[in-house]
Image (cartoon, rainbow, N blue to C red; front, side, top):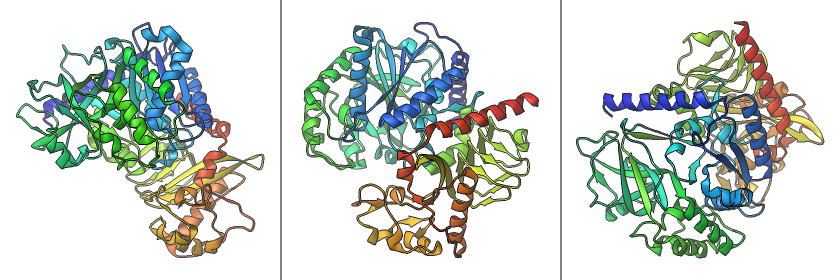
Length: 582
């Protein structure tokens, strides 16, 4: 990307942050911001967590006042995907607002899900993941609202659909604006390499509409491809050739990939009719693949039978897709090409570490800090470059290695954190050392009618979702790079003692009951750290007799929300007091 366009992207991004910051702690005027901000949740317990946090954020003046914040949970039963969540959210909006909905501009942020690839966000939600920016500190919710701060004033009534774990940055010419004023769907599109296209949605554009290669172009889409192969992109004419005026990519060829889209009010009524026709959902619908593939003048019904990208195939899925196709067929798919834009995904531990500690481009664009809303000696110095400390209290003798993130934690005297690790929500006693490349996260749980603490520990690159059919195959599950059976031997436990929570036909690290239940957070952290160190050093650590063990899955099922938020409130008050003392 040429220096001119890098500078434009940074300037445009900083201006959006400035504009949002000016709205953060005041009431907004009609038309100045969203009328309704909707966050989706997987179930009632996640909804409760989200509502509590949003209320606290409004009270702390972190979000604009005078607008409606709503959290809608999926109905109990089968998983319904973000497409199902979209339909149910529209139904709930319709129930609450009735005819008034035809005048409202709504942003709908999909934030349900377990966040198994970034478990520090599992208990309290990935939309509340901290971002080292702003005072008060930003979370992903504020960052999403800031990056879209210019949309509501250029949008006809309808709904903007987006996800909780990505960021889109863009710049446009001063005399232009991103307008959502056309009937049907209007999607944002970003120039991307062909390899990125294979994991995203790709737009096939009308080649007759001459491209000007300005920073922004409005065009129409012939059809939408969901996670296509490179051959399929070429066969469908989705591949564009880079011209001399093109901004973002070094590659000679590129495709336009998806991120966020808008549905006008009349089309939302069609989707409401669809939900009435479908009745209760019993399978996962994709808000991108299943809705957008039905759109455009060259869309065909073929995709409805392709279940290659589906996590769990239900017999009703093909039928439901066909109903969606027939209902939406002929609906326009308008595309806004953001030629000077970037799409960042922050949904995994490795992405989180990279973007917050190593990604120089994103740090420059957003103005990310290495220390944000924290109290420790190194507040204004740069003696530990390449690490990130947020919303934490560290003793002045602590050290944090390059490539590591410490968030929502309290670290005692002489604590050291190695390189490339995440320490989240932890209270760490004096002189402890966290090794390189590990993930440690403390949760408060309700256990036998009392508040207890569990610290889960994994390797940064461990696959928590990978499952085997029975405990007999646990050799295939790797923790810190060692087989689960080998880890158990270091803890003096026999294989048959290990319990997996939930459905017995799928055993994964997520469901492995490995983590001790303790009476206080400090000993919880210390015991889990000793277990980790025994494995890494090849020594033996014996758990105290009658220690109960829980899985990450169980911790979430009995999480003690109030206690976890109380700990964060204590940090907030402590950091605020120390800052005012200084």
